[in-house]
Length: 558
Image 1: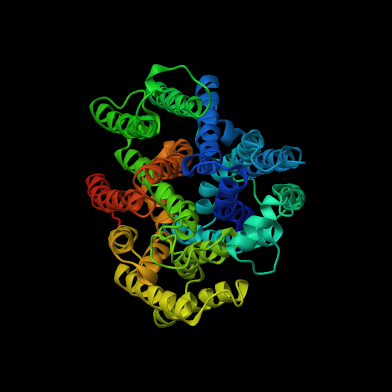
Image 2: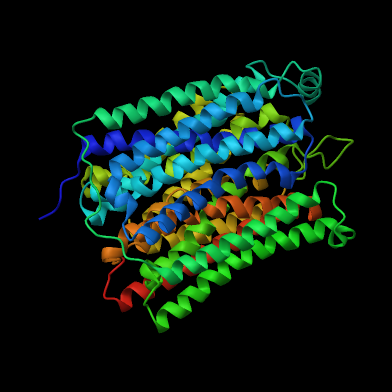
C-alpha cells in the first residue's frame, strides 16, 4: 500500500527551506559589495562562501563526532522536529551577531569583514542542523519512491527565496534609485552607502527565525518523526573526516596568514601561485580521502558505518561537486559582470557593458530563479497529475515560474534578456521530457547540458556567453534531490548517518568558490570558469557509476 503524503507537515517544513535560499542567494550581491567596500581581492571576497558553507561541514561533523563518541544518535534522540527547532535558534544567534559586527563599520576596515564572516558562520551552523534533519524528514513524509519529488517541492520554495533574496539585499544596501558605476562608487566613498544598513535585514531575519521555531514547537499537526534506527559507530569514517578537516584548516590558515605581515620564506616569491596551491591541496585531500574510504570499505566494511556503502561515498563527492558548482557560478558572476576588461569602451570580459554592484542583483536573481524553475517542475509529481496533465504542466510551470522572476525584478530586464532566457528555459523543458522523471537519466542529461553551457560561456562573447553561464542555474536545479535520494538508497540502518555525511559535503560551496576566486586573480575571471566544466563532468560520471553500483545491489534506479 502506497504511503500518503503528510501535506500539513510538508507545508510547515518548506518554510525553513525558504530561509536557506534567501540568505544563501543574497551572498551573490553581498560578495561583490564586500570586495568594493573593504578593498579586498576576489579570493578574499569568496570567504563569505567559505564561512557560510564551511559551517555546514563543521556542524554536521560535530553532530557525527558527538554521536560516535557517545554511541547514541543525537539527531534520532532529539527527533527531526526538534533538530530543526534547535537549528533555527542557533541561526537566530548568528543573525543577531551581524548587528554589532557591522555597527559603525568604516570603508576599508577589513577587520569588520572577518567579524561578519564569524556571524555568517553561526547562521549557517544552524542551517546545517536544520538541513541534516529536514532532508530525511521530507522523504519520510510519504511514499519513499517519491521522496525526491517532495524535496523538489521544498527546493522550489527554497529557490523562491533565492530569487528574491538578491533583490531585497540590493534594495537595502543600494536603494531603489538606478545609479551609474561612478555614482555608486562616489556614494560608497562618501559614506552615504554603508554596510551597516544590513542591520535592518538581519533584525528582521532574527524575528523570522524565532517565529519559525515557535511555529514548529507549537504545531500539533507536525510529527516529531525521529529516526527508527540507532546509531552505529564508524571509527574509520570519523578518522578520515577529522584528517580532512585538519588539512583543510591548515591550508586555509596559511592562506589567511599570507595576507598579513609574515616572515615565512614560503611566501616570498610567487605568492598568488602558492596560495592557489594550498587551496588545491585542500580540495585534493577531500577527494583523495573519500576515494581512499571507497577502496578500503570495499575490502573491509567494518568501522566505516554508512561509508561502507559505495553509493553514499560517490554521492558525497557528487554533493560536494554539485554545491560547489551551483555556488561558484553565481558567486563569481558579479566579478565577471563588473570587471573592466576594456578601459576605453568600459566593457567586461564578455564584451558587455560593465555593471556596478547594484546592477548585478537582477542577474544573480535570474540565476537563482533558474533553480526555482527546475524545482517547481520537479515538484509536479508530488500532486499525482495524470500523464496528459503532467506533460502540459512541464511546459506551463517553467514559464509561470519565469513570470514570477520577471515580476520580482519588474523592469530590470530588456527584451533581449527575456527572449534569451526564454530559449534557455525551452532547453530545460526539453531536458525534462527526455529525462522521463528518472533520477539517473535526469543527472546524465542535465550534467551534459551543464558541460555544454559552461564551454559556450568560456569561448563565446556577449549575451550568448552570459546566458550560457546563467543556464547553470537551470541545469543544476533538479540535481540535488536526485543525488540525495540515490545516495541514501538502500542504506537501511545507516540512513540517518548517511544523511549527515551528505550534508557535510555542502563543504563544496566553501572550497570551490575560493579556488575559482584565486584562479580568477591569476588567469582572469572568465577562464576561471573551467572549474565549473570539471564539476559538471564529474556529475555526469557519477550518474553512470551510481547506476551500476545500485544495480549490483539489486536496486532499480530508472
